[in-house]
Image 1 (cartoon, rainbow, N blue to C red):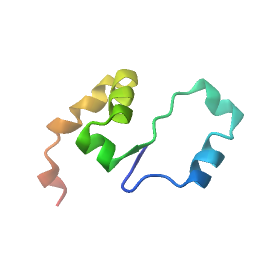
Image 2: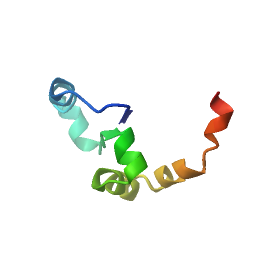
Image 3: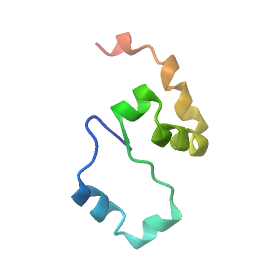
Length: 63
């Protein structure tokens, strides 16, 4: 999941409070994580290798 500014603690508490989500790997990334290629981003790329293709997107097309 990607958020521009990050996630509030209440969001994380509610999200991870659902027992059926324990079977799913969830990475909570901010734009800073993606742009700075933080440890959180690297961990997410290991789970979702195609995430690294985000660098190949031509963002100009979304104007």
